[in-house]
Image (cartoon, rainbow, N blue to C red; front, side, top):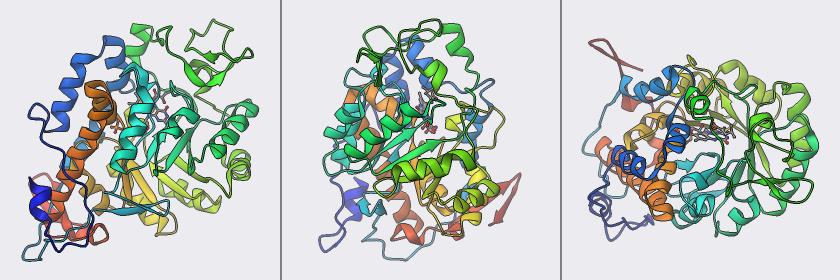
Length: 394
Ligand SMILES: Cc1cc2nc3c(=O)[nH]c(=O)nc-3n(C[C@H](O)[C@H](O)[C@H](O)COP(=O)(O)O)c2cc1C
Ligand SMILES: CC(C)CC(=O)C(=O)O
């Protein structure tokens, strides 16, 4: 396979051994189809849908087709190195696992399977606050790996405070404060399906007064202390009030990143308020429908950051060439959401490894064929933009 062909005996680059092919599942699109067979309608809709008309969800995907790669040749690509550093450690390629809620809907092992897969593969996992496994149990399976905790800062701060103390103790490297959710986006399928967690699953990080984890009870229930229906969104969040507070809670043990930035102005503010990194994200098209595709928002954010803080991006990444394009447009790393859920649903831990492995192989192949030997060489010189019938240099 390609990864093996690109490797030479003398290569100093330690590269992952390729997984044997699964001939039913050679692309992320095939993975999505296989996963769909294993999910009930409520789960499939919850995982796959976007907000409202799904415009931003679609555009996140389509934006990658506005660019084509300008390959360079005769560059001796026998020693391509796709690895990057994240949180001071090497990860195999510039791709990590975005936080997605309630993973036991996809597979009984849920977030533990994802953590094990991330550990085996060697990349960073983002854990949603609204996971169906406690953050401590997930951390137990991370091996040498770094994990980060996605955070919704609740109006009742004591819930968040407790969570942050636990995350520090469990060794999480960073918190990713989600900022694109001041109110919850309109998800019509969830409304029609009257989405709720099945009774055997819990939102595990928020026990009630009796120590029981909260289930995703309907909004009328008084049982749980923190429920996603009522707590994921927090319209009161602000730069002045919350970021300083969060840094005080987290530093120096955990970095504070902001997930959900889309503009140069907010990037400047993030830097001014001393955050450690930003993720360009629109929540996978699940929040503001009609918002820009993340790939379209990325160049502005990267320009504004001017290398002062890392700029990551998520949304619509379904192929190794998508990763290449995002890096060329200024991202330091990408995060993937739904493809991991599809991997989980297809085959638990093995499915998540398959997902990462497909993207890795495609990215490595793309590097070799585009004529770059390291991730830092990937710049906008390697892209053209398609405007109608014209191709323009960036
Ligand atoms: C089912 C699902 C649940 C999600 N849950 C969360 C969450 O709890 N917190 C969060 O910040 N983002 C959440 N996200 C957004 C992801 O972190 C990420 O931004 C998005 O999935 C990236 O787009 P992609 O799915 O096209 O890769 C969720 C996304 C999906 C699809
Ligand atoms: C509403 C949250 C619990 C999960 C989330 O962020 C999402 O479903 O997009």
